[in-house]
Image (tube, rainbow, N blue to C red):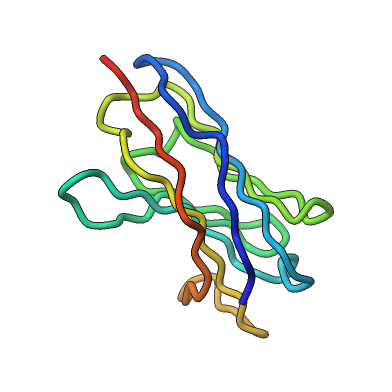
Amino acid sequence: QVQLLESGGGLVQAGGSLRLSCVASGRTFSRCVMGWFRQAPGKEREFVARISWNGGSRNYADSVKDRFSISRDNTKNTVYLQMNSLKPEDTAVYYCAADSRPISDYYRPRYDSWGQGTQVTVSS
């Protein structure tokens, strides 16, 4: 497993942008499938985006496609979530997750490490 720490959340007006960062500890980050999830009050945690170990593959939830972008820098053990054109319905706690298995399956990830989350609030 890896230790994950998110940052970059905050309060922003609708239409604004934020960039979330997630720093991972450990030497295995570069082979991890990384994901972003979010949980709004009273709702279940939902998938937002994921990225393969080398950044070559990326997937997004339909609700954020064309607005959010996931990226990673393996030299910094960091994964990012650039969020543009934010909407009030994007308000949630955002979590970073890692599939740190020795051989991870990008199409069937099993996230075994989670960060504590960072709050994103979008005002109308």
